[in-house]
Length: 368
Length: 247
Ligand SMILES: Nc1ncnc2c1ncn2[C@@H]1O[C@H](COP(=O)(O)OP(=O)(O)OP(=O)(O)O)[C@@H](O)[C@H]1O
Ligand SMILES: [Mg+2]
Image 1: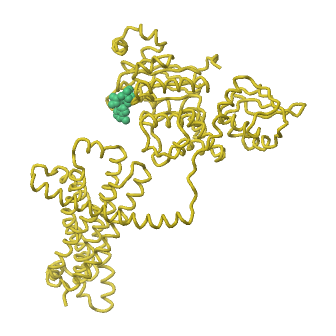
Image 2: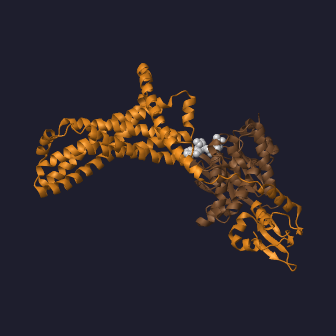
Image 3: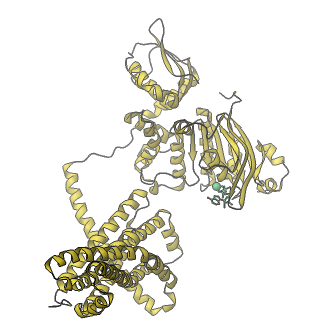
């Protein structure tokens, strides 16, 4: 393999030799480009020293000739054909994506607003479709996608138990430890059970589980639907006459709505155990006392609120996940963007809705 | 340009298995420079598997593969990368980057070299598009917006981007109508003659074989049972070959 060089002969003519191919040229381009740029229109060229010429080499020469054949040129028919083939096409312009103008900014703003509207609309359509599917399934009970529902219950519920228990336990310990330290300073340790019970059962439990599930199952649901779009599995299902909303969306939504309250119960219970343990170590509060006073100081309504919030959060997370999953276009960029959007939107929605719950239910279950 | 007896691909005694499934058992195949070789075999006979070994995507259990006279896995990262840039691959499903448009897909390997200027990249992309008989306007389409035949042609243009010496094509004509698949084969032959490259092409298709006019390597019984010209292949007495050419 001869390295590409540009030799000058006695008459000042140029004499490229070696392999003028992209691979051979690439390491020497830094030297060759300035030499090629100096060429004038009158320079005579002799191309019979070139062993191999590919389209990149041909293009380099053509550029250096100022996009025209040199006046004095010694060249074999074979090489002339290679260069002619390239030059026939270098004039072709690729269409450019036009640059950004102030008008585009306005259009972008409008498009953003419209796309928000479209999100809301699509979400409502999804919800409506879900209700219709439920009505349809009530009339045709044989068509319930029970296997899918149970598979989803296992995936989003049973398999989430270890991690939610771990997180719940640690939060319970930390909360109890920090509150106990402060309360000791004021001599109000007796209220520890109130704080832990109310805080965990009513607020922390549901929100914590919702955040975990949004990150864990919401993203998985979105990505699954997205990959099914990319690999045309959604189309294959549709072609078989299988409703994707009954077979894919409904099981996810139902499973998560059913499972979330149970996960909330489980996580809150483990968090309380953590808090109880920490209280026993730090304050010497006995388990018996903790368990006895819990129902007395925390009205049962809080448990209902916590579990109810869990169900609503589960519904929202699954709906948001499916909404974004079905919007994914068949390319990887859109898959990534929509999965991110799904998790972010789910978490934001959960926190917003939690705030609404806090305001609406401010008089319920709070001991006066 | 077609005088050198230099071997480009040399497969020696390659054995390949997936779990208990022995797919290749002692495959030998030698391909010289400027040759066109068609690799045929029944579905599931291991053609794609052999091709993945040749381009170094998976390692055989036993046996050796030499590309351009060097062992495939010799050398450090940069040497291996340089070797990989000497061949272009068209995958069975196209494998275009779905997030990039057609132009950027073809420009991708050129930009990776980091020595070609943006203006030159655009011109080369326009040229590669015309080589595979696509229009410059097609550069802005996304892979999801292409027809099956266009996907194959864009993938071929991308495989040609780095001016490879060896071109490996996995079923380039599957999913095309007979007329188009013959046109595609003529395109490949024209490019092969113009650029003086070696072509290895996997196919199921007798029409493609007839149009190709090169050597035919037959993969059956887990090895290459013959690798001779089409006329001679027709004469080989083997149940698979007899069934294959029956139609
Ligand atoms: N990643 C893998 N894991 C397990 N088995 C595999 C894998 N890839 C291929 N196989 C098996 O290896 C065998 C050969 O597959 P291969 O894809 O090479 O066939 P092929 O000749 O290319 O077939 P086709 O003409 O249908 O494309 C098949 O039996 C297949 O099941
Ligand atoms: Mg295959």
